[in-house]
Length: 342
Image (cartoon, rainbow, N blue to C red):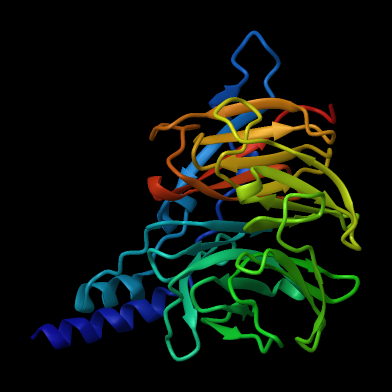
C-alpha cells in the first residue's frame, strides 16, 4: 500500500515541479535592523541577516524532494563549521569542514547542493574559496593538499593538476587578466602562482618577519587593481603586496585590543578601499582605512546578531554586502556597508 502511495505522490510531484516559485529578493534590498556605531553616531555597518540552512535564504525543497525525504529521510543541510564564503548574483558557496564539503545556495534557481570531490570523496578541510572565470569556483583543502574546481551547476569538485602541488593550500585568489591562480601555502610560508596549465610560475615570499616575508600565512584577497591582502597569521599582521609581489604596506600587531591581530583569519576590501578582517580570538570584525588605521570594530564573543564565535572566512561582494563565516555559531552573518567612501 505504501509503495502505491509513494508512486502516486511522485507522479503528482513531477506534475507540479514545473510550477517554480519566484526567487527571493536580493539581500541588498532587505531592511537593516541593527547598526554600528550606535546612534546618534552615523551608521557605517548594518546587520542584514544570518543563515544556517537553505530555508533561511528562501530556498525551499520541492514537492518531489519532500516525497524522497518522506521515503528515505530528510538530509541535514545546515552549516556545521563554515570556514569560507563567497557570493555572486545570488549564488553563495560556503566551505564547511564539519559537513566535509562545500554548500551551494542558489537563490535564483531555488536549489541547494552539498558538493564533494569526484567519486563522492569527502573534503575534510576546505579552507579557501575563490571565484574564477565564467562562474567557476576554486576550493582548497588543506588536509588533502589539493585545490579543486567546481563548475557552475556541477555536483562534484574536480581536482586540479597543480605541479608541484602545494603542501598546505589555504587562501586562494584568481588573476583573471593573466589567467593565473594564486594559492597560499601555509606550511611553505609563501604564495604560489600557477599558470593556466597548472604549472608553477613563481612563489612570493618566504618564512621570516621582514616586509614581504610570512610566518604561516592563511587567507588572501585580490583587489581590482591586483593588490594582494594577506593574513600573516603568526606575524600578527596583514600585509599588502603589489600584483608582482612587491611589499607595499602592513598593519596589525599582537595584542588584545582594537586594531590588534592575535588570531586574524579572513581579509577582504570593499570598493571604497576599506580593509576588513575577522579575528577568531577577538571575535571581532574590524574595519581599517587604506593606510591601516582602525575605523570600526564590532563583535565580541556571543550568539546574537553581530556577535561571533571563532569567525573564519570573510567575503565582500560588488554591492558592499559583507559575509562572515561565523564558524562555531554554525552560520554565516551578512552585513551591509552603509557609509560613503570615507
